[in-house]
Length: 220
Image 1: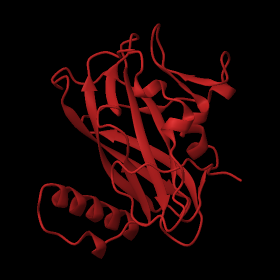
Image 2: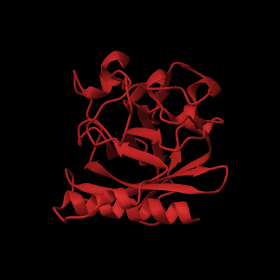
Image 3: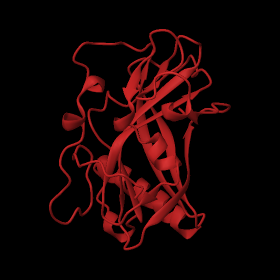
């Protein structure tokens, strides 16, 4: 599980660099680079009408190796216990609207299926070398702790596990929202064209937070 250790070290070095500590992050480059993109307020954990917690994460993933990486599973773990977060199922496999992901509860948010990575990653997904993928990851879990301050941020661990059982780990921060707020013109209502910018024409290199890249299907 050396790759998991390297990913954790790389994440720690990037956090230190963000705090102004002089470190060389190039000494440990992850095989799979996982970067939050978009506005910091777009990715959040929030209360649902059914009493559970929802998570929305805008993410970009790049396979930095020269070989395809089949995805075995994707795990989301917060800092508190008994969260039991699970990914929203593919709407095409559920009864009802097949074109949109729906969080449970009346008035809860929904996302166009073509902008969500849940079914792409979890249904025999394959990360192709140097081909960035970007979109939303959507999850539901047990209620979040009451002591989390609205408007603050809480850390989660996102792990992509390959079929070789090597884990690719990244710490992410989600804004704490007491309730979902449907605002006209919200970034969550953006068109696919605006959400997914063009894929880099040359050498993807190392992604930086805030850089936008094109979405690429993980399956043939």
